[in-house]
Figure 1 (tube, rainbow, N blue to C red):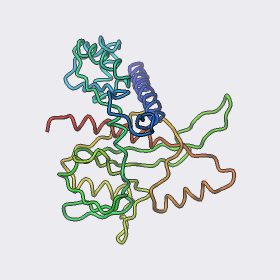
Figure 2 (tube, one colour):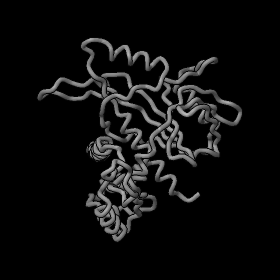
Figure 3 (cartoon, rainbow, N blue to C red):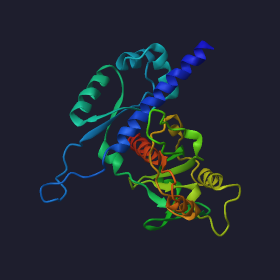
Length: 290
């Protein structure tokens, strides 16, 4: 019983740590530096860098010594596996920290934050599965995806809640609104993933037998069986922000009606957190040997 409680406490600490990283990441403005004329400044060293630990093959004692963890905490971190987002730091501090971690025997990836933030999704609002490809309608027009086009599928549940009134009792209850779901299809030749929102996807004319999420999952499993899956977003403590409108479909109509209702409380979700998480996970995947 005591061991189970300790394990739970350790995991909650990890979830809180990742949630805090997500809140900081989502709050950072996504803008390019400019010179005095307003034109983009010449490319320079990235303002911030993500330090990601791969963890595969890492010894428990090495991880504990490098990160200042107890033996139990290190074992839980390794049990969950990597890649693991360690910190997001200014470039100079990141280089110093990466050097320290490597000196302690850890494998570290340095990923420019700009690369992650440029991986803004394109929205697929309709589509159908063919014999060997997924035919989608996206922002830029028709898109046909085969397994050879993809490097990673990232999936995750989206938490939603109403903004609570300010005051000492203000808090968020993750279970107060029906959760959503997002799927990202990361492509080899484009940093931008294709985002699928089951609640805002048009399956016409055939519809979705058994539900939208189940139908999309079935298509992906059939068409892209060899593409790696990433479901790690379930470990992240939700970092809420203003709700992201759906790209289209009936879900968008419902959202518009709610927003137009007098007295309706603003809705929060963690879509921005999911997108950042998905982007850095894909950045790690791009660095893996092919």
